Length: 250
Image (cartoon, rainbow, N blue to C red; front, side, top):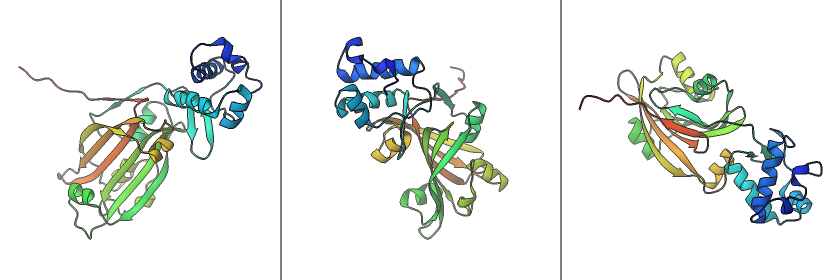
């Protein structure tokens, strides 16, 4: 922090509450290249001591920068300067995969697995997938990242006869299903707002209480059978969901 001139004397150079002045100083340091994408911030305690402000002030300034996408929290690792990411349009017209979408944008998709295996179905899975209580369901829960930036949390469930080997799924679920000749051919999407739980905000590196775009997808086989139900929580600060309509005659 001592070599970051944009933070020196920040209390006199900006107006407003202390946390706003500190946030503006951090923004200046990022804009002027004193803090580069990928740089780690010191612990909040050290920033508090160096800048002569309370840790509450530091946390409020950092929370705002995380919400704006200028900083990125990584659970267990700390806070880092985020790489610039433009808002992205997520088309809903066809059931593309996250991997396909990111490749189209020139970004590298990756996943952090949260749950991957077969289980007895819960009531929602039984109803949506037409399963009995003693059937098996494959669950794939993962954090989706693009260029190492958290983008979405995905909760997918499929009948075990469609996906008997979920542990073999690597980057793309649909590529794996296509290799098994089981890729869905159509899907229905339902979009809603969702308040993230504490664990979800940590995974997505957004402030507590943040809202997200929730897309629930039910996908069908060529025969019309429901073979996938997925709930994806997209970061609302990075995504716009786009749907195209054909307008018929009046």
